[in-house]
Amino acid sequence: MESIGVLMMCPMSSYLENEIQKRFDLLRFWTAPENSGFLETHRNSIRAVVGNASAGADARLIDTLPKLEIVSSFSVGLDKIDLGKCKERGIRVTNTPDVLTEDVADLAIGLMLSVLRRLCECDRYVRSGKWKSGNYKLTTKFTGKSVGIIGLGRIGTAIAKRAEAFSCPIKYYSRTKKSDVTYKYYPTVVELARESDILVVACPLSEETRRIVNREVMDALGPKGVLINIGRGPHVDEPELVAALKEGRLGGAGLDVFENEPYVPEELFGMENVVLLPHVGSGTVETRNAMADLVVSNLVAHFAGEPLVTPVG
Ligand code: 8YV
Image (cartoon, rainbow, N blue to C red; front, side, top):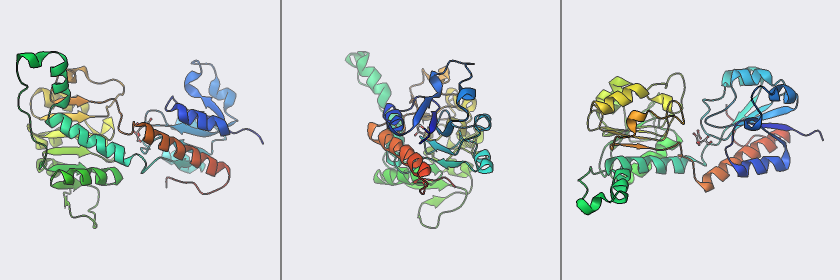
């Protein structure tokens, strides 16, 4: 049988590379020298693209690949894929929902605790030897704080469940009120922020949700409020976030994602009320391997003419 070309956009998992290589002709986009005509050379053999949260399949890439049949994303987020273009061309799309939900929700709670209890700052305090000159100052209690969640999907719900175990009242904003939960619904993010001690971004990135956390929302959250972002950087107006933190209009932030990863505004580096993570929400061995297995099962199903495991749309 003619070998099937699978284009991987960037390094994401060596386990995934091996699993693809066992079954398909794996083409590593990042290894091709710039302007080498790599895509031109392989355009007629590439039938699948594997992307992730940083590199997906935009209109330009899709237009370059006339034989493309499927985009199998190593992510739950689809914001790096031109879904309209895929639909137009009849290209199938898959992602990795469910398998990463628990890890991302765990990390969101970790960020809440880290910001309120200043865990990273405390760690630096011990390592730098400062403890020998005196005890660390008192911090802020997490249990019982009201947690507002933007987006009550799989991940938002998993965060809510965990926060409930800390006796936190849960509130949420989503496009529509959910009939199956008792959490308090707010029809606007500003109202939710005003009533929350901690505001968590857990919705997908779309044109509607881009900069959903703007200056007005940060001001509503207020000088004691904490923003947690485990969604996407562009959900938050980053320059406004830096300004709000600098001016003390916002109490703190726990961020796993940024507007222009891996570049992070350096003004945040010296702030003790801010915890910065390098987009590691799903970054455990167990979860990344489960995500890889899903990517591969979707590719295998597609090329065997079987139903996709986790189709989008
Ligand atoms: C990953 C993610 O960090 O699933 C998503 O949408 O952002 C993450 O799980 C990423 O895709 C792994 O490379």
